[in-house]
Amino acid sequence: MTTALTTSPDAPGAGRPDGDTAVRISHVHKTFGRPGTAAPVLEDINLTVAPGEFVTLLGASGCGKSTLLNLVAGLDKPTSGTIEVPGGRPALMFQDHALFPWLTAGRNIELALRLAGVPKEERRPEAERLLELVRLKGSYRKRVHELSGGMRQRVALARSLAQGSQVLLMDEPFAALDAITRDVLHDEITRIWAEKQLAVLFVTHNVREAVRLAQRVVLLSSRPGRVAKEWRIDLPQPRRIESAGVADLSIEITEELRGEIRRHVQH
Amino acid sequence: MSSTDTAATPLAKDGSADSASVEAGLDALETVQAQRTPLSVVLRQKVLPPVLGVVLVLVVWQIAYSLELTTPDKLPSPADVWHSLTELWYAGTLFSIIWTSVWRGLSGFVLSVVIGTPIGLLVARIKPVRAALGPVLSGLQSLPSVAWVPAAIIWLGITNSAMYAVILLGAVPSIANGLISGIDQVPPIYLRAGQTLGATGLRGARHILLPAALPGYLAGLKQGWAFSWRSLMAAELIAASPDLGLGLGRYLENQREFSNMSGVLLGILLILFVGVAIDLLFFSPLERHVLRSRGLLVNSR
Image (cartoon, rainbow over all chains, first blue to last red; front, side, top):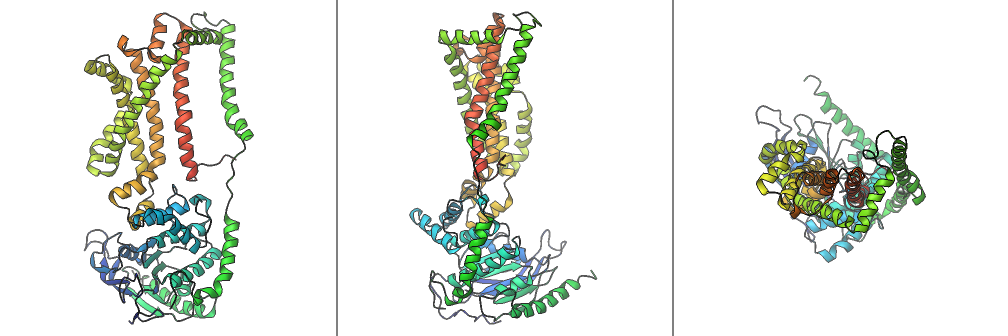
């Protein structure tokens, strides 16, 4: 597996965690409950994400993709194996926006800045800048319940970016949105990913979404979750989810995914 | 890629002007403008019905009096009770009676908050403490605090301290329980989100857990006030001593000793009035503000 992609790893920029690795997952196993009694959820996962790389983790339910993301986020510990995130605690976005309803949109972002150690006087302007980045200028004082689903996810994205991490983990962040909003947010995350040169690890069960967004698609098998196959996607960004290139590759990947699911018929 | 952090890359610029306008359109379409109900509607829907309710009670009362269902010394007219009120007013003692009880009730309540809040936090967050104290707190909450009055008098004598003890025993469990249920109901997603943002330990409690638990906590405070007030009135009724001064409960008991029924009714009404007034002036607006700002208050058109 080579790591050289569209970004040039020979010129590590400021704030980059490491020359060539944003996330390194080595021989990770995860079992819930007592080892030996319960079936493993993840088995020998090996995966490296380069700085600035966009990787989607694709799999049917039960493949442990969210579990893997939680492990990378540090919310849970692997049963064995190691996970390295050289740049420190990565940012994590959930399917549910998880914005705090007792704070305004702007204050949600400021709390993240505060917890990241940004000095008080810089927080307000930085929050405004981040809101502008997700095209929500003027929503600083909005309460969470006053925002639409798409707007909430954009505030959540801005809050994640406020952590200042170069690694962004996304756990099916657009799954609960309608198709039109989702399309727009795909453009948005592609734009911000390129602009901020983030390493993104994006979990989804939507094959087209995976192909639309990623430079690399990683297919996980189910029960136990293992890396089944990988595809490198060289289509130019921004892509359209309806385009022929995306569709062709989606058909190929869907076939593999279905094959993985069919293996479970006998069990 | 030669871009800096803020400048858009050529790659991003292409399709994004188009999608930006779609996005702005969606935002406009999907944003619901929250409207405040006009004052006239609030008056008609929220203020008028309870006023009518009170008027109805007064009318029924007056009719019962006029029909002479019983003797006036058992059921005085509303006018008689009003007369007792104006008498107190002209005697200059009305406010001192109310203030004696309100001061005692509020300071006892504040003390209960100071004690009940850390207890609630400890019980909610530390498992062994919860196993040990949780059932005790729930049990205490269902024990009428008037049952503590004899004990408090034996321990502390007929003193202000006995009054405060009864208030604390009544209010602390409900305040602690309110905070516990508030914390139990915090959606786990907030705690996980807080954890990924780096809010763990005390920072997590301060920035995530406590604000998230605030609605349940406020409900507990509200109930705690009701319990404080009730306990205090029970204690004042039972414990008589010149040292304690004349509060509402004592006023009520004095009127009974004089067999002055309009004074008794006035005492009951004043106790009711103070309890409700403090709730309406203080706790209800606070609770409404918190719920509204979180979008938890269903706007009744």
